[in-house]
Image 1 (spheres, one colour):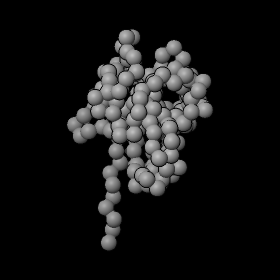
Image 2 (cartoon, rainbow, N blue to C red; image 1 turned 90 degrees about the vertical axis):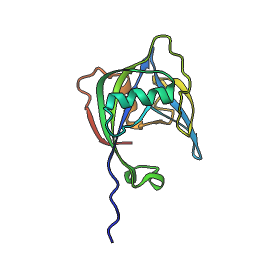
Image 3 (cartoon, rainbow, N blue to C red; image 1 turned 135 degrees about the horizontal axis):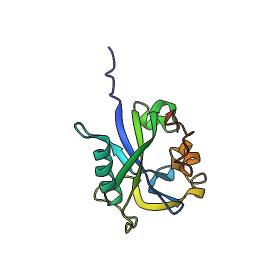
Length: 157
């Protein structure tokens, strides 16, 4: 008997940089502290930018101004270090440059993720040493306007 095939899911993520720091979700699970970018899954009938605005209200407590698409990556769970927990997952993630209001101060949103503990400004120079995912993006954050950066990054972690 054939196993049912799980659908590929889309997600929209925010890259928000201000004064040399990136806005990140501080999370904690059984493996310890790690960071990720705000955003999440696209719902049926929802555009990617609408999904990103909704997810940011839920996770960081403010609407964002969605600017330009910067990166696209596949996340095929079976190929990554935490494969045991999400080996059946295949997501396509769209990373947009975004802005938050000038008066914004990091805080939890209306519906934070279960593992989310806080929202922080993570200095760009610390992204390599912190557990910020996706790890492969760290080299690109400081040079988002570099036109030689690839847009599609493949299945990276």
